[in-house]
Amino acid sequence: MKNITAYLLGVLITGCGTGVSSDPGALNTVAFASEPVLLLANVLTTQAVTSDAENDATYVAIVEDAETHSARLVRQDIRETESTELDRMPLGKGAAQLVLGTDGIAWGFGGDGSEPATFRLVRSTGATDIPFADHGPVDVLDERSNKLVYISKHDCAIEPLDFTTGQIDKRYSTNVSCFMTVESVVQTKLVAFFRASDDPGYSIRGFYKSMNLGLQTVDHGDSDFVGPFPSTLEQSSTYPDAQQATWSRTGKDGKSHIMSVGTSPWSLLPNPGSELQVIDDAVDAGAMVNGEFWGATLGEPTILFHATSTGVKRYKVDYEPRAMFGLHNRLIVLTADGTLLEQPIVADK
Image 1 (cartoon, rainbow, N blue to C red):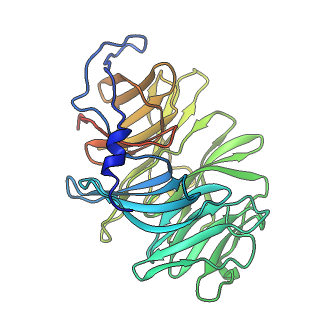
Image 2 (image 1 turned 45 degrees about the vertical axis):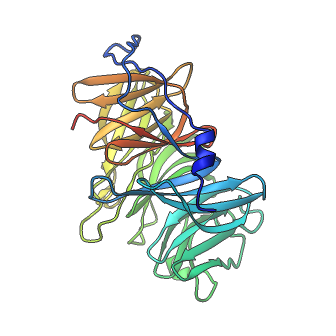
């Protein structure tokens, strides 16, 4: 089903008046230049992809088909009105997830280790089931060199599954704590970056995809973390990944400390994270766009804020972001109800 234009027009969601102020308690009504446009509904998860071209942007999403109780993997160019269905499978248990690999797109539903997981690999030649010899992954980290790398809750390890043999390549398996729970994963081209619960605290960790380094800890403590925040994937194969991975930590001052680290060299260092900015707003979702942080604080109303070098601009919106991706001068927003929006913005840089 490629043409979804008529359906989208019927459920279009638009923004309301906005507010800009350097005072956290003030909300002046100033309208966005453009209202958000609905891209897809019933989205379970998504990734956004951008290249150096100003308007060349694509997203890939897993969409629930309620009528057939199935999940669809779709791809769409941001400039087009039609989406292309790449694959379809029955809805599975566990979190919907996908990773854009060197051999194709691995997508499916991660389990808790108690039963086999459902994943498929989509290549230019077609889609095939991934043959797990055991219970399969909880969290997918990478796909390259004909292998799927994932965290297994069942085995308490990072395991590379060889597609050719259907077996785990034990030479490159790495043990992880059985008490660690991965709560959210962000995929960049070189790093899988995630927030983990390590009772009694939390950590921000990462997996450097091209090297067998295990899990690297970037930040750790008993303070509240939000994120990591989704990043776009650069298409260039000749330059290192220069995007900034970000997350938020609530400090003792009650404010949100926005942390940032480059995804290219960070995993080789013990703790290269640095503080990008401190803001009064609570952070529930966020994204980097042109080196600037955009975030959201959920509530009545939801506040979309833009942290710049000169202060923080705040806008009222009538949708609740669950995740945001920066694509040039736009945000791709996945809302709490599974709606995918394109929100045009204007960055200061």
